[in-house]
Length: 384
Image (cartoon, rainbow, N blue to C red; front, side):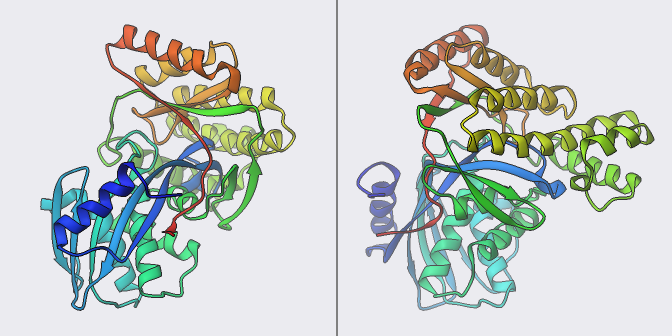
């Protein structure tokens, strides 16, 4: 992907201006949209995301000392820190994704020189498209390349996940970082979040993935995300299994009454969502858009009623999308409580779909949405 315009050229120019010399190389890490498989990743389950053609671009150069200078172009903020005994800082919470990633590399015995970094992106922040994971993976890709680290994409994803846990305070699964690392053009990716293996699933021709941003923002740390994770772990403990991944639908129904009502709802979503995700991947492989769309719609209902992570804006956006001609299915995507809906739409219907959904949503909510027609893109790495 050529760095000719937009955030790519902005970070190259910003690097020159901030540090007084040209960067050594440019890196790109994509955001992601999860087609189906929500809140299953931290339950050792299955997810079906794709890396999207919205990304974080990062210009970088190594330094001769152990200092790191960071210019966040979009935020118009700067950070300066040393790599020795690196800890989270309340004063620069926005920089946790950079600091945390570098700290995890240090703790993994990958000591190296400092860096000058400038980054910007067009992944909407707080929309559920993993802008934070894109920052983490862009930093990881730069460190991997500039210092010739012998780390696999899975290694880099795991270190970035730890950064999110320990620096940002969000107990996320591995999906966001991993799909940003291993995405492929034209492919969704079925990821097994226990074995950490992945299989490309081709997206059918003639359809588009449309991301519908409600413009309602949420912070994962301040939401019920961590609470939901704890509830799932407690449900698995009560059922005597390592993780909810270990239950199929039939077995869950036999034992579901052993759980308190709230835990039963949370666990039911995860068990059925795992089943939906595997069925959805198979439907895509066979070009069965009708079945895939039905599974998307069922996923949204489950997230709304069982996992209770939707909100009025997401429900309205999903319902409007589902009602449009040419839309096979739509669901909230991301952790919830705000953010985006993802829809699968016939290409000839995309223009009318985006116009109608945006107009009705804004009229009913007085919020201005943003709709993105997305393509599946390659994962993180240097830009030639």
